[in-house]
Image (cartoon, rainbow, N blue to C red; front, side, top):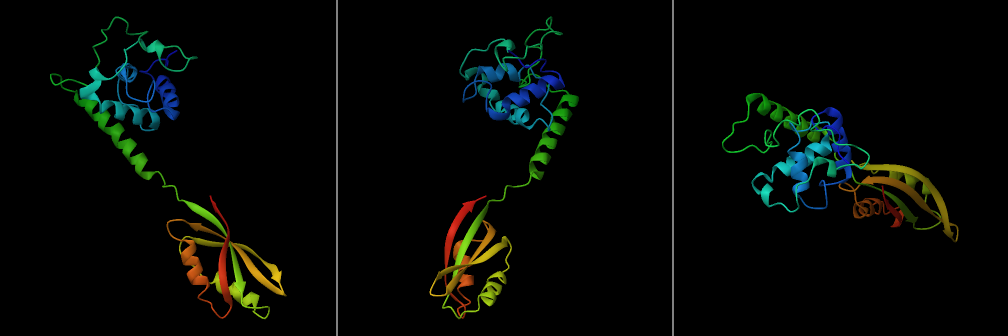
Length: 224
């Protein structure tokens, strides 16, 4: 087990992939496993490794509580993917484990270079996160629009319905469906943005064409 060399780009990539569907190195709460891996890093992960950087910033927030986190700190080779070997300490076995403390202490000053690197990577992460497009919730709705009688001009009725143009509403295909006694209803599809268009608004706008429309019903409603 391991992450390869956590001081290399390849090792950080392994860590990022490992954390893609995990919040922590082990279990569902911060533990000494997170502290062990955190302290093996030489600097914050770059912004393009968003899962690793998210985890790094979260664990860093436990700076003052790290000693009280549950679990027992183990060797790096006890964590990570089963098919990857830990090589983080291969080139620096002679160094003491306390040589690098990413949490820092009150008696140590962070070098200007390390501080600048940390700030640049955090800025890159925040910039990338702010540019990520928001997910727009949409729904596909099938409407049944019923006329007054068999003499209603259905072409004009559909024209009136499609004349409703608002932000977040896109009309789709339509067809006439027999309902009996020579009367046909208009069945029309539309896609709406949930935050902008609702069925109540559609019903209000469509039934406003009272010369043609008797009623409107929702035949099907599916989230996209």
